[in-house]
Length: 74
Image (tube, rainbow, N blue to C red):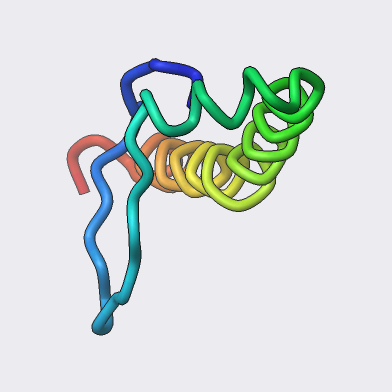
Protein backbone atom coordinates (compact mmCIF):
# COMPACT_ATOMS: atom_id res chain seq x y z
CA UNK A 1 0.00 0.00 0.00
CA UNK A 2 2.82 2.38 0.77
CA UNK A 3 4.86 1.42 -2.33
CA UNK A 4 7.94 0.86 -0.19
CA UNK A 5 10.45 -1.96 -0.19
CA UNK A 6 10.46 -4.40 2.66
CA UNK A 7 13.25 -4.24 5.22
CA UNK A 8 13.14 -8.01 5.79
CA UNK A 9 12.91 -11.24 3.83
CA UNK A 10 9.97 -13.42 4.76
CA UNK A 11 9.73 -17.20 4.78
CA UNK A 12 6.50 -19.07 5.46
CA UNK A 13 6.92 -21.76 8.10
CA UNK A 14 3.66 -23.45 7.19
CA UNK A 15 1.25 -23.56 4.26
CA UNK A 16 -0.18 -20.11 3.50
CA UNK A 17 -3.34 -19.23 1.59
CA UNK A 18 -3.56 -15.62 0.45
CA UNK A 19 -4.96 -13.30 -2.19
CA UNK A 20 -3.76 -10.04 -3.68
CA UNK A 21 -5.47 -6.96 -5.05
CA UNK A 22 -3.98 -4.90 -7.86
CA UNK A 23 -3.02 -1.26 -7.35
CA UNK A 24 -5.51 -0.16 -9.99
CA UNK A 25 -8.33 -1.93 -8.15
CA UNK A 26 -7.26 -0.41 -4.84
CA UNK A 27 -7.12 3.06 -6.43
CA UNK A 28 -10.70 2.64 -7.65
CA UNK A 29 -11.78 1.72 -4.10
CA UNK A 30 -9.87 4.66 -2.60
CA UNK A 31 -11.46 7.03 -5.12
CA UNK A 32 -14.87 5.98 -3.81
CA UNK A 33 -13.82 6.01 -0.15
CA UNK A 34 -11.05 8.64 0.25
CA UNK A 35 -10.54 8.27 4.02
CA UNK A 36 -10.04 4.52 3.77
CA UNK A 37 -6.55 4.77 2.23
CA UNK A 38 -5.05 6.67 5.16
CA UNK A 39 -6.80 4.48 7.70
CA UNK A 40 -5.61 1.24 6.06
CA UNK A 41 -2.07 2.58 5.68
CA UNK A 42 -1.89 3.63 9.34
CA UNK A 43 -3.28 0.30 10.51
CA UNK A 44 -0.91 -1.75 8.37
CA UNK A 45 2.10 0.31 9.51
CA UNK A 46 1.24 -0.04 13.19
CA UNK A 47 0.76 -3.79 12.78
CA UNK A 48 4.09 -4.02 10.93
CA UNK A 49 5.90 -2.18 13.72
CA UNK A 50 4.27 -4.28 16.44
CA UNK A 51 4.53 -7.70 14.76
CA UNK A 52 7.74 -7.48 12.72
CA UNK A 53 10.02 -4.49 13.25
CA UNK A 54 10.03 -4.44 17.07
CA UNK A 55 10.62 -8.20 17.55
CA UNK A 56 13.28 -8.25 14.81
CA UNK A 57 15.04 -5.25 16.34
CA UNK A 58 14.95 -6.84 19.80
CA UNK A 59 16.35 -10.11 18.47
CA UNK A 60 19.11 -8.17 16.70
CA UNK A 61 20.00 -6.22 19.86
CA UNK A 62 20.00 -9.39 21.96
CA UNK A 63 22.27 -11.15 19.47
CA UNK A 64 24.68 -8.20 19.39
CA UNK A 65 24.79 -8.07 23.21
CA UNK A 66 25.40 -11.82 23.36
CA UNK A 67 28.22 -11.64 20.83
CA UNK A 68 29.79 -8.61 22.51
CA UNK A 69 29.73 -10.29 25.91
CA UNK A 70 31.84 -13.22 24.71
CA UNK A 71 35.57 -12.95 25.32
CA UNK A 72 37.50 -12.45 22.14
CA UNK A 73 40.09 -15.24 22.51
CA UNK A 74 38.39 -17.81 24.71
